[in-house]
Amino acid sequence: MPKKNENEIKVVNVRLVKEPSLYSTKEVTSPEAVMEVVAGELKNYDREVFAILNLKTNGKPINLHICSVGTLDAAMINPREAFKAIILSNAASFICIHNHPSGNCEPSPADIAVTERMVRCGELMGIKMLDHIIIAAETGEQASFLRKGLLDGMRSRDDYTSEWER
Image 1 (tube, helix red, strand yellow):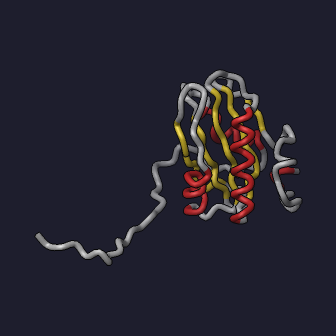
Image 2 (tube, rainbow, N blue to C red):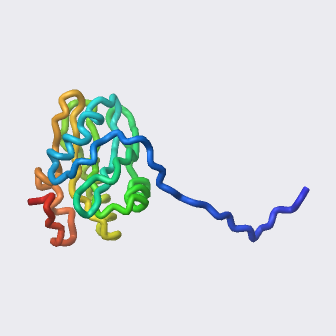
Image 3 (cartoon, rainbow, N blue to C red):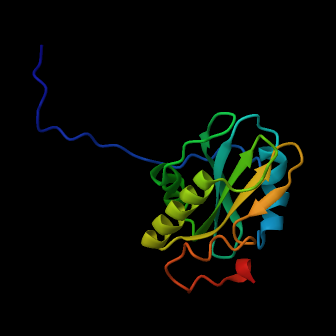
């Protein structure tokens, strides 16, 4: 049996693979515009689904990446998993989106903690997190962290004013 070379370094490739489109390429400039693009999809899940909408500098969606499919009342999110697709997509900014199968779209303490981590990680890499939107099951009602003012205390810099926030 041949002896394996202990000094062998494996070469790997990590690639973003495009799947058939599920969503519109309509420019998103507000939480309401995001709802038009993705609410129809996310409101129908019976489990929590956490997704990232990756955006170009002009606000047009690059893709929607489903990062986690969880349980009835939780979805495990790690910024490392979310930022894989954000970076591979060459996104200038992103929006976190997840659903609440309970039908209540109010942010939970866990939602707030995840949002703060995502904001800070984005700042470290120079990729703006524009919003975190929660979509209620069945009704499609939404809660925007931006509209509720919840992002204000999370950002360490004041230079995030964009068309999205006006």
